[in-house]
Length: 114
Length: 112
Image 1 (tube, rainbow over the protein chains, first blue to last red):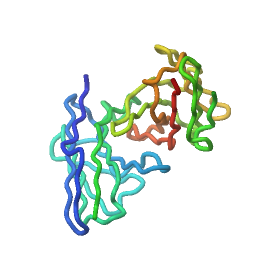
Image 2 (cartoon, one colour):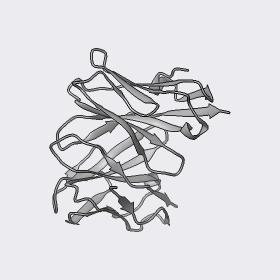
Image 3 (cartoon, one colour):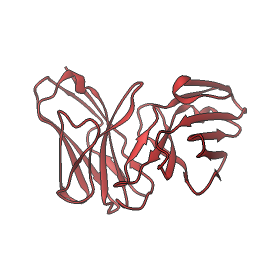
Image 4 (cartoon, each protein chain N blue to C red):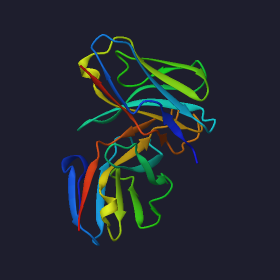
């Protein structure tokens, strides 16, 4: 089974702190994604990566950056956390960037910024 | 029971009844669709998918129907059980790096 692992399930940070959210997938998937999920707004795409060191902005990239130094790992970085970034963050991956296929999700990281 | 997706975010059904959850998607070029189930505090789980060259697909107790003419997707759950209580949302794949866009979800509440 494909496993997408998000290292932190719950985090509490202060405004202005730098925050790292880590995600690892174990099935050699090309594509990796970061979404945030807020009540009533569904999942919104922050950034995605289709290859090592490649990144593309999603719909709401402001205030975030990402890093993909290895194929299996995709990190989301909040350079200076703000209270409006309190949310559930979901990492996901797909096998191919070309052929439509299942999007596998991690269990989520719930971030609270005080 | 029947839900209209975004306009009726909560659907309550009796255990043993059939449930129908609806989703209107936005892009006529979308060619692949997935239904996900998300339980409280967990990540979304794949339920069933369908490609645009089909109009119906069946799984175990679940059926997905696709109507491309009106850009509508539905998930039917047969003999709904308490364990089916969760938020359900549809995802459409718009091609282009295999990106998905999501509906905001419908909460299914199964009464024993």
